[in-house]
Amino acid sequence: MTSVGRVRSEAGAAWRSFLRRRTAVFFTFFFPVILILIFAVLVQTNPGSGGSGGLFSKPAAYYLPGYLAVVVLFTPLSRVGSSVSRHRESNRFEKLATTPLTRSEWLFAHTLVNVVIIGLAGIIILALMALVTNAGVSFGALPLVAVFIALAVGLFCGLGALLGSFAGSADGVIAASNAIALPLLFLSDTFVTPDLLPSWFQPVMNLSPLTYFARGVRILTYSGGSSGGDLVVLAVLAVAFFLAGAYAIPETD
Image (cartoon, rainbow, N blue to C red):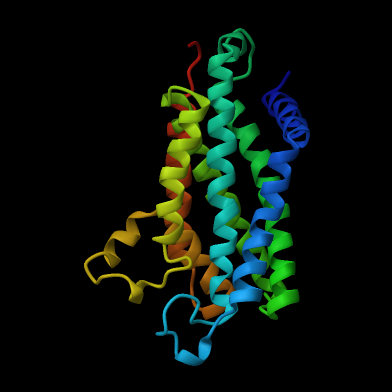
């Protein structure tokens, strides 16, 4: 079997495993929908304050990267991290070591599945935002938005693999992923605008990979301008985290 065949086979198994976990399917697709209904419809935005009136003081389209960041961040961290942890606990990596499937191929297959899953969730988010807030996105921006999503998913799949490789249990993976994801979500230029944070902390936001995803998508869908710099940084980080995650996956445990 070729490398493509091995990746396709593992990806098919991972996809079927995802569909069998109905709770995972529900939260992947409907959790961001719930957030949009709460914050974009019930709370709503208040652009009349000039963007300086606190949280959700900007137009609805400004927060689209934040809603996308929810699934881009949480889903890969928890799914890949938990998968690696379960494989370790059941000694499945030891069995996989006897097959031609490499660790990078295994992670790449699971990354592809997550890209598809989060891509579908992203379509739902974009459609719902256009429907309930009139925050439409031009079709010309969608290909680059898809590239940003794919790179961010690859990055956080790599980080999830690192968590799953070093955490002591599946519960430890969930705890670690939440401890990482929650601060990143709100301190990465997603929902909380930089002007609401202390001036000394604003440069720290540039240390978050999610910042480059959020800024790049916001440029494409809201503010306009060149997103090339954010795309390059995100791509470099995605490759680095993917390689680190693939290297950390144990052959035996």
